[in-house]
Image (cartoon, rainbow, N blue to C red; front, top):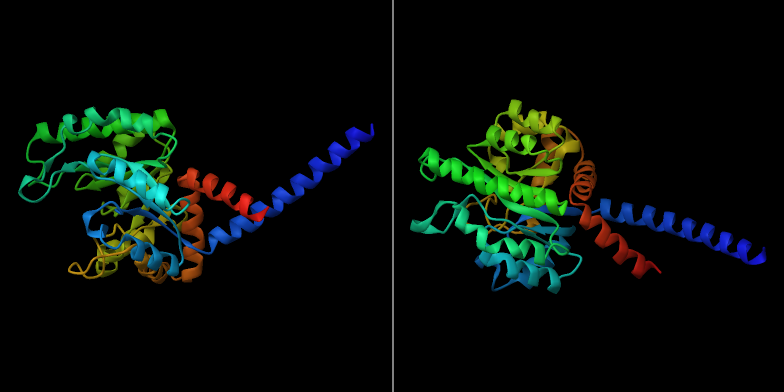
Length: 305
């Protein structure tokens, strides 16, 4: 009986300590930013990634969700996550546009299929499937065949996300409604529509489906996005930089450290404080990318104990 009493006492004290840790952890995470969509494996960051991430930390960024556009970045983003554990969180995805410069073209299924085994190989490491989606910009997807091929690649990656129980990080240029409808048809529940530029009515269809939306610093220069941000509930908004692209000045490289620009702009549109935007968007991100919460929570337990 004495042994049973000691065990009961121990369990009770452990639960008390665990509750205290969770409370402290939640409040710490709420006091920082999460950049939900950035391209850390981009060539623009190769020479000074250490300095870039140091500036991000100094700006209050607690976590970076690093997406890919092509399979050539998969191993690189995994290496970044191993080099900066608990700060850089990798995603795998094949963007709807492939190549670069004069070779930029609409994605084909052969851009994805050879690399499908990597999703399984690194399933424990990746926190989302992305950047995936649709881009029906006329000069890139000129034909019905090209658009159908994009949808085929998109659906395949949505199915991978469902199989791995991961959220999706989504591109939807000139294809907002088709993108949202496709995700709804496949039963996707956890999605981030990054740099969303569709109609407010289409955005609200995404809100009703439980999706989140994020906006980079560049949107602070367009009134159209102000109307969109005003209508989307804060509980469905996350922060992103989309760096190295979509900064305030298109001629200057964007960085994750510029996340405050997005936060302040959304606060201005919503008529609330930047602190409120930071706290709510961070909680939204932790809910969406649940692996971030688990990783940081257990890391914090180790440091706390």
